[in-house]
Each structure stands twice: as C-alpha cells, then as structure tokens.
Length: 197
Image (cartoon, rainbow, N blue to C red; front, side, top):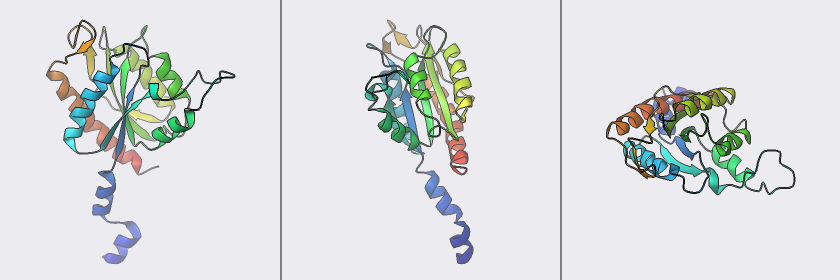
C-alpha cells in the first residue's frame, strides 16, 4: 500500500491539500462612499466560521489599475494584482449594480488578467435596487469567457430591505443562509477545479 501512496498520493494527502484552498472575496467597487467593504466583511465573517478554506478580502482599490491599454499611466499595481489573483483557488465577487451591469472598475480588473482566472470557481453576492441581479447576470457571461465556473446559488441583497438609508448594511437573517448555500457549492467546485490546474 505504501508504494501506491507514494506513486498516486493518498486520499488523506488529497484531503489535506483541499483544506488549504484560498478563496478571494473581491470587492467590485472603488468609488468613494461604497458599501462593498461592509458586505465583504460580512461574507468573510460567515465564511471564516466554516473553517473550510482561507478567505481573503481583495480590494480592487488597493491596486493601481488604470484603464487597460491607456497610454502613459501608472499601471504599477498590475503585477501585484496578477500575483494575488493567481494565488486564489476560487472567488466570491461582491457585485454592485451600476446602470444594469457591473462597475467599470470590476470589468477593467477582470480584463487585466487571463490565465490567472482560468479553471477556478466563483460565487457572486450582489446588491442593488433589484438585488443586483442584472449585474450578476452580466458577470456570469464574463466569467464564462475567463474559464471561471460560477455556482448557481446567488445571494442577492436589496438596497431597500438589507440596507438602512442605502448606506448601512443590515442584512435580513435569511441572507446568511443564502451565503452558506453558495459556499456549499463553491468549495466543492473549487476543489474539483484544483485538480485540473
């Protein structure tokens, strides 16, 4: 049995590797006064209780990512952006709906990379006047092109019922269940895709 374990690895070794999954919680807005940090912290708090992965908040605003291809600008954050995304095994996108779609900052950040996204899984937590549903649907199409497999369960937060005055995040209790259901899908998909990278 020892020979085959050395040759193919053991189920225990595989399980040990899988418990080390890195899941990035990407804040999809960079504008002043944004509420995505509140939503991201809430998701991380729920996720950390599970103990099934290493969850890290990744804030696009922390990276210098001018418009892709724009001449004569400082794109010094691109290398660090590539490195942090490449280190992740899966993602949770915190998505705001702007004019029926995702933010320009998120689209630009997605476009900066290619292979770093490939063969990974993602969950989406959106918010807006209709729960950010239209932005989430646009994001799904973009993720498909980047070879990111998005899971079906999608916590959709309403500006009317999950926020006070549109700024203070106070989610309804049912939303925590929705996040956990999304993670119940995201973790196995991330493990499965880990095996083909």
